Image (cartoon, rainbow, N blue to C red; front, top):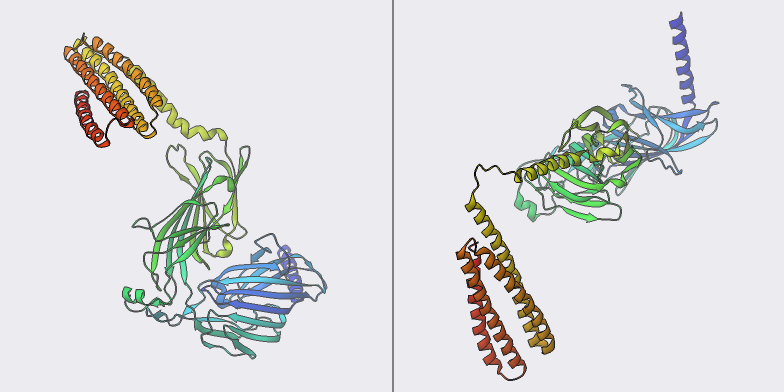
Amino acid sequence: MIRISLFCILFAIVFVIGQEQDNLVNTNVERTLDLVSHLPKEIISVTIENRGTKGIRSYDYYVEPQHVNNVAWVGANVKGKDNDDQAGLPIKQEATDKTKGAVYRIELPNDLRAGQTITLEIEVVHAHALRMYPAEVTQTERQLVLYKTNAYYYSSYTTQTQKTVVTLPTDRAESYTQTPKPVAKNEQTITYGPYENIAPFTRNDASLHYENNNPFLTVSNLKRWIEISHWGNIAVEETVDIYHSGAKLKGPFSRLDYQRRQDSYSAVKTFKTSLPASARDIYYRDEIGNVSTSHVKEMQDQVEVEIRPRFPLYGGWKTHYILGYNVPSYQYLFNKGNQYVLKMRLIDHVYDDQLLEQVTIKIVLPEYTRNIEFYPPPYNVQRLPNEKHYTYLDTVGRPVIVITKRNMLFQHIQDFEIHYTFDKIMLFNEPMLIVIPLFGLFCLVIVLVRLNFSITHNESNEVRMRIQAIWDQIIEINLKRTNFYQKLDDALNTYKTNKDLKGYNEQRKKIETELKTLQQDLTNLQAKIKVDSVDSAEKIAELQRLDSQQREVQQLLSSLAEKLVGGKMQKQAYLDQEQTARNKLRDINKNISAIINQY
């Protein structure tokens, strides 16, 4: 008895709901069918009137049985009303009826009371609904497609007046159904209707055979990798398998004909991907390597990447590439204390009128993240079990959220949110994994170099080390000496230009004082090294002798310049004597370098 009573109650509820739904009437329907791209899109403006006695909270939209498997998107809004929610009205897909089709229940914003009307705008996008007819074309042939639809608006309610406007990509229509009357064609548009008093679930098949050479691109598989770093960066990488889903190429491909004729109608040469405006470090590559034919254009609200594959895509052809970029985390990652919220797009705009057959998104969070909560966009996605990702210096692994979905369109470019907890002190975990071992290693090295592991005292090694240490100082003195002589030469050249004898003499005296100091340092080192090596002391003496010769030559150059500036010497005579002096300087420096290079 209890089971029978429950069955009766459920039957009564369903009966009442059915009665309420029967009270709805489509007073006016304006249906626009856009067939310009490879994704047929319907925009349906339907005015609903409640002619019953009770309020109605939902409206059932039906998809014909022949298109049930092709529906990729159903969205609805109240027409003429600003709606901040980009997802529009809530929609729930009910059980599919084999004879009537699929049902999408649209929840109205408020009760539609008796006698009230409301106008909804329903958007429906179909995928893989076009049939290539013919299925194969040559390289230079145009692409023709066949699409079958209902000339009437398919609904479970009576429709008082309705009209369907079909938009084609060109005015070339091979054929189209011309019933029920009236049917009118005007260039790229075909109008069915207006029709009046159409009963529920009325069907009248209409076929349209027309030319469509727009890009028939389809992504068979897209793997999107989003890696979050609390050091200020979010890395995004997409691995894309894309193919041309139009009419297959018949016969061989001729590169010569392709380059000579620019009217390869169905070929896809390039397409544009839109990235966030803050995207940087963009890269585009395939199995061979970097693809240099791409172009990046920075715009005010986005970064546009022109993707040009290595070869044009004809029907049935496919390609594979990887596109990656970085964005600053402050635009997408927000926190209050240790509580973080990540909000960003689930997918990017891959190309216009995109169709992504299989999408896998992996979101990599920082290590030691906990209390993870994922909030998907306002449409159904499938979440798989979390994974672990290990990279440099990871110990427990980074949590990876895995999301999959089929048949994603432009309309699916919406935000998701991830809420999680992360202790800021853990930011220093990986740096400390480097710092602590290195610090320990340095301490060990400091201790080891101060230990003497030799068994006996080696006097000859100590002498050799002392000699080398002194020669290191001599080499440094020689570098300073060379720099001072260069400054002296620069001052001489300046004097020949500005003829400022006073300024030149002051600068020369200052440099000569520095040179005398270096000469004295060299003498001290000579005395110090003589105890351990007489040979080294003699070589230092030779360096001092060469330095004295260089100083004499520098004084000669200075004297010649003064005579030239004072008009006491002809320019040609000056140049001859200067060249002789420069040659002598070159020989002196060569001899000095020969001695220095021995050490």
